[in-house]
Every structure is written in C-alpha cells, then in structure tokens.
Image 1 (cartoon, rainbow, N blue to C red):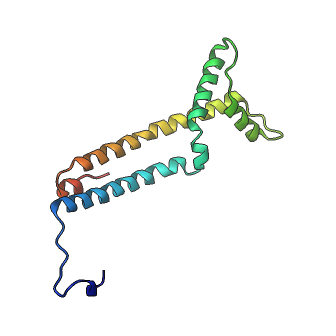
Image 2 (image 1 turned 135 degrees about the horizontal axis):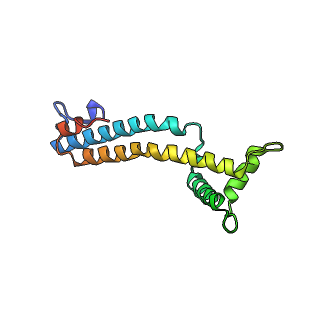
Image 3 (image 1 turned 180 degrees about the horizontal axis):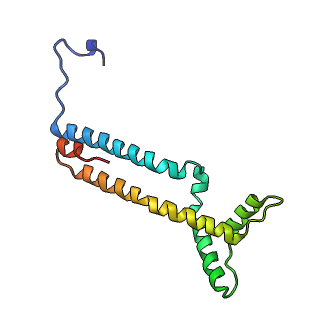
Length: 143
C-alpha cells in the first residue's frame, strides 16, 4: 500500500512471535526442499516425468519376469509395458531381450530406491521444522 493510504505516522505493527516462527518455518521448509531437489534431480534428470510415472509398473513387470526367468515354472508373466518399451528400444534391428531390459529396469529401480533415503531425510527435517517452537530452533535445522 502507498503511504497515502494510511494516515501520517501510521506504522505496521511488528510481527508476533507466532508470525515470525511461521515465516521461519516456511523459509526453512523451502530451503530443505531445494536442497533435496538439488540432490535428487541428477538421479532423474534424464527421464521425462511421464516416463517416471511408469517406473512402478516397469519394476513390477521386470520383477515378475525375472522371477519367472529364474524358475522357468509355468507361463511367462504378461509384460505389456516392457514389451512396448522393448519394441521401441529395438526398432527395426535391435536385439535387446526382455531379460536384459528387465535387468536394466531392476538396476535403475534399486539405484533410485537407495536414493529414497534422501526422501526420508527431507521428511524427517520438515517434521522437525514443524515441531520447532522457536525461530532459533528452526534455524538450527540444517540439510
């Protein structure tokens, strides 16, 4: 607001301790989220979001196929997602097999699962920030 909107000598009241704490918590959570994103982004940056949305299904199909491949018991599981990916990866002359693709999917999933420690750390720190009762308590929390 412009100064003309308020009478001369008008001052904005100082923020309450609760408001200062809320501001510090919001800023700290943003800082934690930024640090988390900075560390996780290299793990997923090469993958478009729409592909990332299929990772759970890819991993499920790959796990089922690898389990079947190891035992060769019964019929092979249905793997429509991996079959489609394999068709695209092989194009007209590729030779990658469903087994090889399943191994690659599993390896990527394991690597990303290990990185989820960062997700747990982010969640723990955000919980600490929300539980902090003072601005000093919030500022003491570091990524």
